[in-house]
Image (cartoon, rainbow, N blue to C red):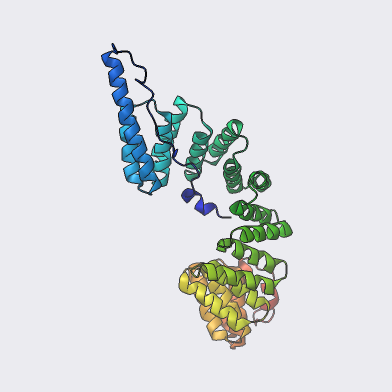
Length: 360
């Protein structure tokens, strides 16, 4: 799932509608001083609010926030200004400040978009149950709010409620049938539920609707590996790395697919590419060790396994595999030590290898 992008995909936007004053249009000739002051304040609010919209549309969030602060200073009951101030603070990752503004906006005026914005802020603050409550309220006020279903699905996914997530993503897709990222994330929820064919279909639809979604191609490839279609997986994972050459997950997954079809040299190249992009990605290093073993480069495999175990000494399977590699270079003592460690860590097959050791 692409939940990691949530903080950067706020769907609440400033109202791109100019604020216009209504005070003083039919003022009596004997208008009081107070009425004149109200008219001036409304005019100042209008000017600053419209400036904020212009700044926001250009991505100048700091300037938009200053203009909104000026708006609020002269018109403190302006719910939309507080709502939009919350939106801007969200974009600036001032989540606590955004929460205060959305709370104030809701005191002044109940609004679906404000509940939605507050829900997103609460997701960013990992207050997932409270976020769901806000999305619920959004949907009470606006039942066809597709994005509210989508983000509620994301909150349910993060809470491990995968079936509820599937339901929410499905509602979002029903309301917005070209919702590519909702297809992608429903695929991730289906994957958690081990509904592989459904996940495959969802990832395919996501990639079809938005051919730039490299992570959808990557996930589609991963599912195809699990379904035994390694060749199809290679094609999808190649698309992923073409779209985003820095996406090391896709290089690692393509390496796994090449390993399945016994293209071990190609697999090593992909695992190495993944490691060049992220040297701390131990899964790729372990996988490269396995591919080197297949090519009978036992010394190279041992070096990769050494590095993996240096970073995580609790991986019993890696001890097992390093022991097998050591056996191949006639390091019987080293092999038996590794198999003993693998057995201690609960790897069942380690005991079979230990039968070949002199002390057993």
